[in-house]
Length: 458
Ligand code: ARG
Image (tube, rainbow, N blue to C red):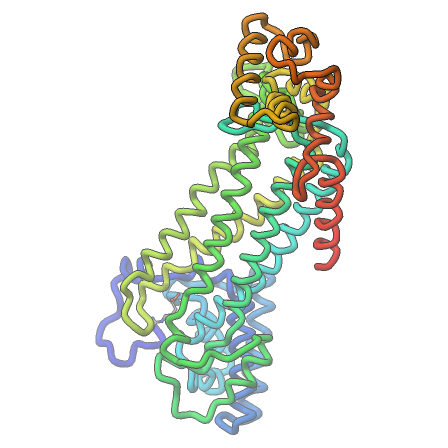
């Protein structure tokens, strides 16, 4: 019999019982549920709503249940519907009337909202730690390979050379924004709805400040209807996870390209690669592909939750039971992906010679040659045309800009002088980009310093 069976003449059909249950998902929140019940019972006693002895019995009973669940000795019964009912049932079975007084002035509606907020606050704290660790790895890798130059791309066509460190740090900044989004989701979750009861508050003289404080919440929700039906904090979290997975998927895509035979820019460690069951020579970047693939599922969870919440009238609706599975999965997937990515980056080998060879192809100094002419007074559009023609000459001769002679340059424009030859090397091109935020070593060093300062401040 369910704990709400009083007004029913028949039990629920066994199929619908299981269909309506959320136990398999929400039992993950048993610690939060117990903490919430403990705080509620203590507050009820402090307010004189239940006796101190009842509160003590409840506390002892809950701690027994927690130990049993920790030890794997607790029998969850799908007929309990959810973790709240499972724990309350076990408590009443154990301590009787005192246990049956726990639900005074409380509803599962404010209970589940409280549990979920507590649970995601913990998940977000570990996500932030994993995000921090990955940013640390990116920083270290950037520092270790500070002098490596690679081709930078637009449209995946060679564009201009950049420092490999500059490229890695671009991901550092994406992940720093992800950190900000995760922190925002944490703030959104850090409000206690306990005491909202089913929807309208309760006639018992609850002390909501007391429970919120005991549970470590920063604030108490101001409207009981909103308290039980707000799921914005879960949307904030799934959004933060989705954006962060999208960022990881972009990095994955680059690792996959870079580790291909065609690029050869990096070699992933054996421990982060897999083989083929048929092709003996294969070494596949499976884990980068997998993170890229999981991005779809996480983004799906965001859309799913938006659709669950769309057009729901106030206050609690059973639809909202569908809020946890995707959100918890998104958080777990992102955390695992952060950990996997950290390992992959930390252990990968950086093949600077392959990058160096690639930088020599693709006329990456072309913009600088045009800039050279523009600096000597030729309008940039005209300079662009002149250099375009030089590139065409190189293509016809199957050579690079560096292979052209001074005479070749001067045939294209008399503004060229001997010093043009110094502008053509990858390190000259990189070194010229001293703009704040640019790829010149001194600009990247400034960036690196700021990144380090930020991480250390956390
Ligand atoms: N299992 C429910 C959920 O996850 C708990 C709240 C149920 N409340 C109710 N009135 N049926 O949303």
